[in-house]
Picture 1 (cartoon, rainbow, N blue to C red):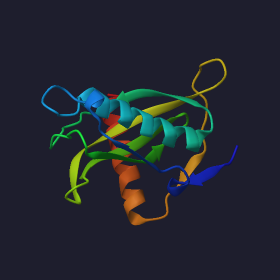
Picture 2 (tube, rainbow, N blue to C red; picture 1 turned 45 degrees about the vertical axis):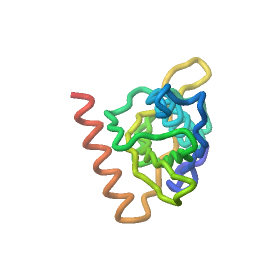
Picture 3 (cartoon, rainbow, N blue to C red; picture 1 turned 135 degrees about the horizontal axis):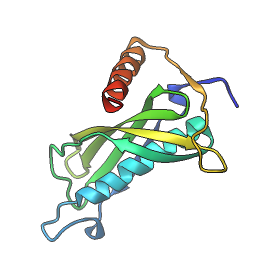
Picture 4 (spheres, rainbow, N blue to C red; picture 1 turned 135 degrees about the vertical axis):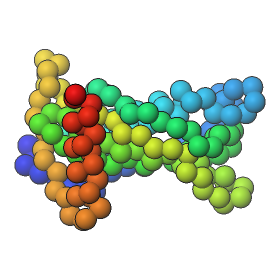
Length: 152
């Protein structure tokens, strides 16, 4: 197992055009559809970092600032911001691109805690992260504070 990895080594973007099957009868995409994609993006990031099975342990609150509609491109951008012994916090940003207009809307964001599991389904250690920029260091510090709050 690699001792430490950069955040860039595991970050990912999932993009999908929203179709009628993803939406309600008003043409707005179901929140659950968006949450599923958020979970998938966090899964990809955590798996790329740990190279082990991972599961979601928690997700903080999420506010949908704008509706996402049929025909919009949903872009889910995910990256690590903190790594513990077996847990990883993944920051996820949700955007909708109005393809005909070329406009991008910030829909919301969330922080998910993902936990790496060994072959017996027990939490197992993961590589540390290398924090290169001041922004990465700040986000890691903020994630540690959120972790302390969750564990109270």
